[in-house]
Amino acid sequence: MSTRILALCGGVGGAKLAFGFESLLKAKLLDELLITVNTGDDFEHLGLTICPDLDTVTYTLAGMVNTKTGWGRADESAHCMEALRQLGGEDWFYLGDKDLALHLERTRLLKSGWTLTQVSQHFAERLGIHAQIIPMCDEPAPTLVHTTAGVLPFQHYFVRERCEPVLKSLEYGGENTQANPALLEAICGAEDAGLTAIVICPSNPYLSVDPLLALPGVRDGLAKTKVPVIAVSPIVGGQALKGPTAKIMKELGVEVSSQSIAAHYRDFLDCLIIDRGDASESEAVASYVPHIELAATVMRIDQDKLALAGRVLDIAKTLNHIK
Ligand code: FO1
Image (cartoon, rainbow, N blue to C red; front, side, top):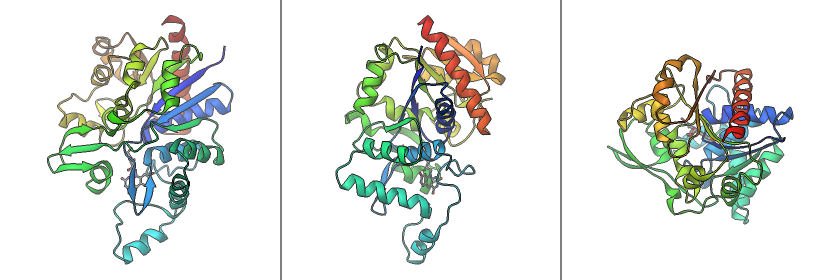
């Protein structure tokens, strides 16, 4: 039987698991991979359309990502940024020279009438990626961050203010936007299409996954599907591996634990995969999801990403027979 995965993904953390799936796809251990990426972080900057999570996923799967930051390209130069700084231009958001080429080309294609979906698939093909990478929607759906310092556009909060303002709540632009038809079709037609599972990658639930879930029809579709919905917890040992997930959870008054992740997704989740080291949390997690699985969820090197993707796929196949 063929194996097909739909992955919902944010930036750096999620992209690592997506890379593992892409490796399985290339090795023909997986037959089809559709990755739908958060675009709540997107913004217009220096006259260009910037889609950080889409680009992080694309660069990661193409083996071109800067592994130190987890975003941007490896072997970058910053001549344009330096020249911009000299002119007194806005330099708070780092855009490497090679990365700029992608933003220039995307902006040009969008202006000539391409959709963001078409541009994203075109870039993936050009960079030798086997998976399909699509944005969560084609229209802008910017996430707004309500903080004690006022309401901030996402990248102003995340990069310019370094997530320092205390977060009060999040507003997702997608609530009034049409979800990508390919995403809705994948979720609603999952059973007929023989999808093995829907996987929520280990991305920040509030900043990266919720914008996707807020799109009309997505959360509801996940709750109704007969295909297993599996999430990998981004919390290990009471901490987030990268980024501000733990800080945000604390500011929202949520305990930093996999139990909180299970509670957050409880209306649609069939299985939460937590780190082996957190086995003692299993009982608490079990009050929110029917299945809990243990795995090595810390992905430092490519081998870790492949191993976790393989484990998720095995769990997916097993649950697909049960659900
Ligand atoms: N993150 C930063 O912390 N500082 C930056 O200057 C920055 C630039 C940047 C440029 C392109 C890109 O694709 C990503 C970039 N990121 C930067 C990462 C990005 O802001 C975040 O990873 C996501 O938006 C959160 O998922």
